[in-house]
Image (tube, rainbow, N blue to C red; front, top):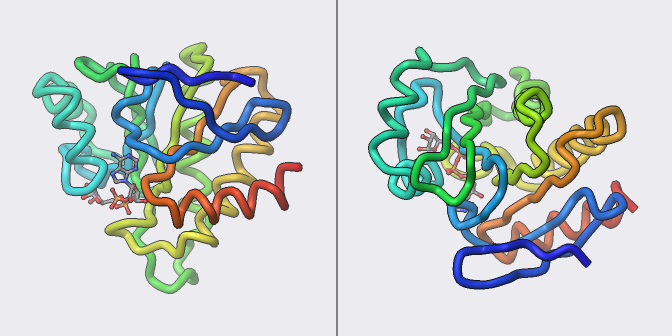
Length: 188
Ligand code: AR6
């Protein structure tokens, strides 16, 4: 079984899709991966939730770097260095705000995953870790968001050699249970 190196220890997650997809519960900012994905807003200048934790852990250099990016629209993703994070890069993805699901939210959320994976591939990165984009402050229902995350990632991995390892890092036990249940159905 693959083992994931965390600062201060080793942790094992559950593996799917021949070991290329891993489910974990924990703090994304602690993962030693090539890239972590931040759940950003369209300014890319920081915010609350995970975004605040990423900026805090990366240090002020991250804000200096994102100021140069000129923001991003929902569904887009942009990359910076990881600075003081254990991750080498941060991919800033802007998820859609949930307005009931009929305003293009599923397509925009799928685009966040696809664009992030494309950036990882284009930078020749082997490992990438995602949070549950849009399911916090942006209120996207977790089950629906998880299904999109897993389907989009599976399709990408089937068509691309890189990244070869995708981690879904759930913050809560509840989210991990949702990912487990859907991964068993969609990835086995
Ligand atoms: N590690 C992993 N997941 C985390 C962590 C962490 N350290 N901290 C929170 N989460 P949210 P959104 C989970 O609200 O819904 C910000 O203000 C959290 O439990 O961070 O995309 C931005 O600036 C949830 O499952 O992002 C935007 O304005 C997931 O991360 C807005 O929030 C996403 O929750 C983006 O909202």
